[in-house]
Amino acid sequence: MPAFLLLQNAPGGGANPVLNFLPIILIFGIFYFLLLRPMQKQRKEQQQLLSSLQAGQVVQTSGGVIGAIVALTGDTVTLRVRPDNVKLLFARSAVTGIVPEDTK
Image (cartoon, rainbow, N blue to C red; front, side, top):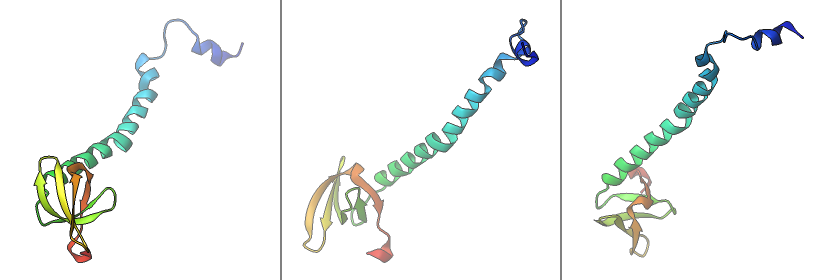
């Protein structure tokens, strides 16, 4: 039997148990910093955007509709959409961003 196999299976626990879990801990750490943390940051920014909405702002919805906010009531937003000035009712969570002034 090769010598390296004998060393791995040697009684007496030569290896530290923490070192056995180190790769798993590193994988979870990388997973957190590459996936979970950016998602939490993005969710926090979206919540700040939704709470700072005001009447008169031009916003874009998740469906691509662009319109000016006419009214905010609870969890709904009423948008006036051009060219016919149609008023549409959306869930506040459907707003994805504020349209910059130069593209209006």
